[in-house]
Image 1 (cartoon, rainbow, N blue to C red):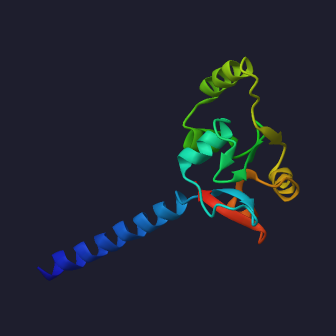
Image 2 (image 1 turned 135 degrees about the vertical axis):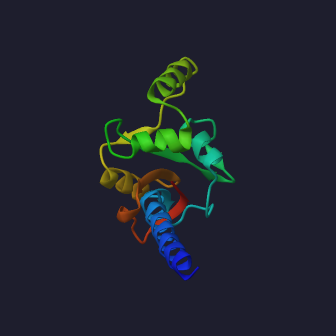
Length: 144
């Protein structure tokens, strides 16, 4: 019985270690952010999706201006998959149909530095950056 307890104890330690390791690997690495003066303190995934698909231009009384990373920039595909729940083909088709209604896609920036500069210069701007690039004057609205 003692041998079984030792083996089980060792096995449980391995399982716990791998669970902790997996949770750190799969933890949110990106954040949807705005300037610290942005009125809402958080947004739901649905609200963010509606903002970036230009279905909403106000949250509460705050006018919002979404900014995307360019299509080939790191994080854009993750954002489209996890937040918009759309692949490139779906998103392309969506924007073609919106074009005929006079609705254009969000502004894009070539880098995370560009997104951060846009957030600082445009009141109500909302974008996404890697969490390691967060700055003190940014408000985290959602993590993914």
